[in-house]
Amino acid sequence: MSHHEAIQFLQGLKPFGVRPGLERIRRLVELAGHPERGLRFLHVAGTNGKGSTCAFLESIYREAGYRTGLFTSPHLVRFGERIQLNRCLLADEALTGLVCEVRSLLGRCPDWEESPTFFEVVTLMALIHFARAGCDLVIWETGLGGRLDATNVVMPLATLITSIGLDHEAWLGSTLGGIAREKAGIFKPGVPAFSAVTDPEPRSVIEEVARGVGAPLRVLEAGDPEPALLAGLELPLPGAHQRRNAALALAAVEALRPVIPVSGEAIRRGLAEARWAGRLQIVQRGRARVVIDGAHNEEGVVALCAALRTAFPGERPAFLMGILRDKSAERILTHLLPACRGRGVVVPVQSDRSMDPADLAQRCRDVDPRIEIQTAPNVAAGLGLLAEEPLVLITGSLYLVGEGLEALGLADSETAGQGGRSLNETHFPLSPPGPRS
Figure: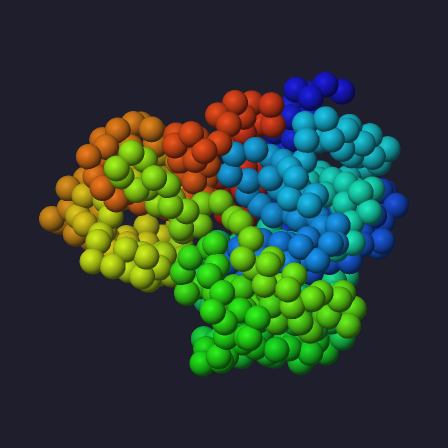
């Protein structure tokens, strides 16, 4: 199989979209000889903050000398971001080999009632890669939800829930309690669980699920003082929400010290050196500053606006935004527009699910009739329209972050070798499924 053929195979899984359930992934790992059974996992779920929390965890354990695997989604620019070994992206050659291996496994078992999805195949690829590499620990992020997510095929050392907010309601439910129940579906009997969720409705559901399965649960209270190993430490990921993500990661690390020893020095160094692109990332562009943040739902935008006020006191940015049409634009705009200076450019997201920029521009005017709004065909053109602005915010979608990084010269624009951002589109169908079981 050539590398081009490997990418074509992954892209060919696009029509299968999202189909929650564990039957197919269980069959896949069985076909592969259960690569997950020789690995240790920290399983992370939540509406927002999953990636950043994973980045903190991975950095701590790598600084402590452990061989780490990191599995996250979606990718910003290159597919290899999803499967990292000691923060090294999966190389093209390794990707091709894994696809070839998985395709061969599927060929040995042609009687699938439902074909495996893109995400299920990628999950298996990650398990095979990490097992073969002899990872000491895998930081394992859920894709969508938790209970029926393909990543829930593993038995972790600990589980973490970062936050609960309204997002992906068509798949996870329209209430915070319902979404919390899906996320808490990663809890396992006797496996310690950690949560940073303090809102009463989702918190009570998380506690109920933990009791039901017999998972010892620790909840980080809103008024808790910062842990000693975090206090006074400047984090590379700015914002109060990132300090809370770091505290959640630290709670799990400290609880697991008898199983996975880590020194205090490695913890502080790992927290201080953690990196995660597109989360309040500040880029100097001539005299201007550009802030890139992947906030794409109401909870994420609220956290972003609070962080902007702290990072840029007395300043309000112009914005460059694109949103997917399955997101609640009104909830996002209600919080975002007052935090910006009244001028913005809207662009399409490079996705089949992109909201039309003209529609998004009108929604901006509906929320704030005084706003000065323009449309542009892409991020690079949008940045050109805002060239005289001293502070610009790029936000609205994680998919937009990758395009922004490329436009600012911070990522290799030659992404065809790994399918680029187009492979993200294999994660979702164009319309939501029927009623959830």
